[in-house]
Length: 507
Image (cartoon, rainbow, N blue to C red; front, side, top):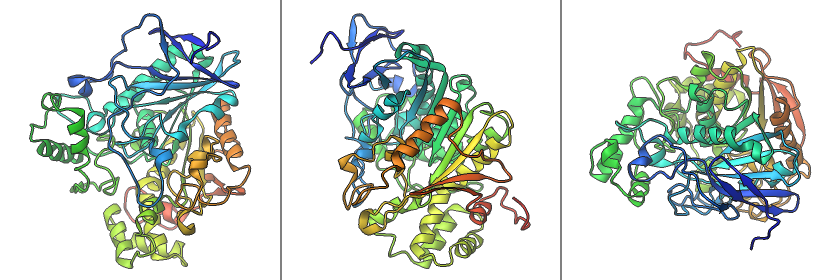
């Protein structure tokens, strides 16, 4: 129910009524772009029509069409959310702000993960209350997913889901002052696919000036498909639907059929004469670019943006442990993981063995997968960004091990999110098959990690030494926090481009 005390904010498009919860005010389901309908699903985002009166912003809204996602025996529902909540007006933001705000607060804009095919602002992990409590205006957003968001189609602009994120940043620039935010201090952050999108936005000329800092959590500056790779996915999607591979043909297909077709595209071979599949078969959708974001950043794009970037120390476990493939891994599985992701697989395996003399086959396989997906592309992006003197680069490695799934899940993909959002207390994260496992994580880990993210958004400095291409200072975040220089030098160098053998003294 609504009271006359419920806060009303007037945006450029019209007034919205939010909800006061203690010291926080939240506005849910505010449109930042027009609903993508019919052929509009394959066009750039357009401004939303204005509305009269006051729009209710007290209830969660629809999200992008998607199929339900599970990951074996681990309960990822707080991450993926409730699946597809139907409704056309789904290009929306949620905004959290302190109830008593004098304005000019730092703004953080979050881009969710989910393999470019799933996820939304409805996920329990993306509640922005702790950010608002600590004097940040937090914005979460939905963007187009799957075929409508990322399939590369003749007659349609590429990377429509990324264009949605840029449009949401434009909405923030126009409107965030009305919510107490400083439009000139915006931090764009994301996790997984969302972090790869953040890297893409960093390298996108059309986003210049819309944000000042970026945080890349388990993303990759080398995660984009080439147009040749993307064309294979497009052909397969068109064949699955029995239509021509053109935007006008796809425009006539229902969302239900597009979602169903997308779920049948897994496993396309994307290895070409020059390029490997940067997602090692895990998703048929990614950004589509002929220049990887790390290379665009090396050339100077995004050089005025402060960057905080990192990965978790056991990223690959999520793709092995919950599906009973970790403990049963063989030497052949390790070789296959290397062959799928590296031009010199035998040399790569040898490097990982030397760096991890006690490592099981499961550990080696997971480490190679994690670096293929996130590590190599994060090192490349960090190095590219740090080469420019105009802004700061900071690196972290999240190492706290979840004891879920008999203690095997570890410091895996997505496990840092509850700490960043200061939500580690949520009951649905605790239990033998839930993300944070049985038992309690260290009492101050969430408070401390969340505070570092807030500090970075406010000042551009998370509280440790900057990363440069000599020292590569990295904060290792665990029960204890330890700053380490180039903590995985051997393994990092094995992914160095070009793939020529480097002399031992090369950084």
